Length: 262
Image 1 (cartoon, rainbow, N blue to C red):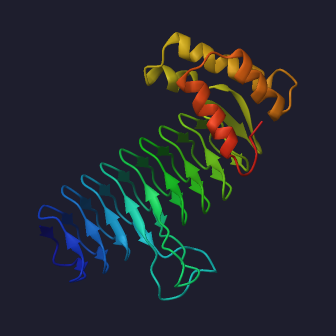
Image 2: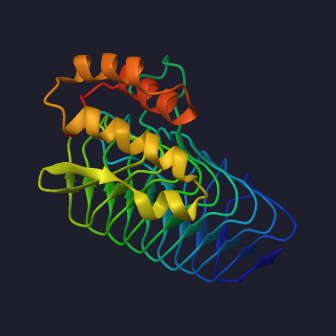
C-alpha cells in the first residue's frame, strides 16, 4: 500500500494491498477499500463504507460521511456501498444511510459501477445510483432518490427526495426535478418537463432505429395524446409491440411514488 505519512488510516480499516492514500486524507473505522483504488488528498472515507475496485477520489471528496438528516442518530454510522471503477471528482459528497433507530434493519446508500461524479456533486442519504451514471458539476440528489443505469444529470440540477430517474434519462442543467423521470427521456426546466426521447444517448448506447421508434411512439402516447397517465398506459399496452423498452417504461410507471414528470 502507498499510504502517505500525513494520511490517517484507522487500524480497523481494511485496504487492499495496492490501495494508494494521498496526504491529509482520513480513512475511518469499519471501512473496506478494494484493489486499485486511489484516495486523493484531503479526502474522508467515512465509517461503514465498502468500496469495490478501481475507484478514484479527487481532492476534498467526502465519501460515506454522516448524512445531513436531523433524524440521524448522533454517534452512529450508517452504511455506504460502492461498486467498481467510479470517479469522484473534487469536493464530491456522498452521505451514508440514515439510522433512525438502532433496532431497525440497516439500510444503505448504494452506488453502482463506472459512474462519474463531477466536482461538487452530491448524493444524499439512502440513495440508490445504478451503473454508468453521470452527475455533472453541482448536480444534487436529495435523500432516498433512485437513479437507474445510464442516466445523466446536468450541472446544477436538483432531484427531490423519493424521486426516481429512469434508465438512460437525461436531465438538463439547472433543472428542478420534483416528479419521476421516465426512462429514455429528456427533461429540463423549473419545474422540469419532458421534451422527448434522449436520441443522442440512445444512439451512443447502440439502440436500433426500431427500438428508438418504439420509444418515440410511447412518448407520443404519454405526452402528446391528451390522455391521462392511466389511459396512456392502457394505450401503450394495446398498441405498442412487446419489447424491452415497453416493459421497462411500464414497470417504471407501476413503481412510481411521486407521479410522472410531464
